[in-house]
Length: 73
Image 1 (cartoon, rainbow, N blue to C red):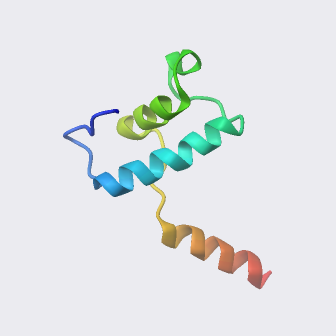
Image 2: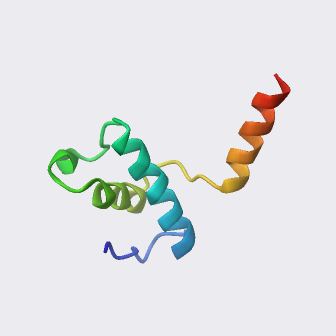
């Protein structure tokens, strides 16, 4: 397991949720945002990307808002 960095402002729950979403993206074919990402497990790459701040912070409320907007159109 990747240790949660001390300087990160996310809770453990937010960190894990965001990393899992990013790991899903990587599994679907997204390119890693770190140099050595191709040679490591995707879950570890996702955790490191979140820890480095390379992934935009996502919340469940954001997804609900996007779904509502697409339903209105």
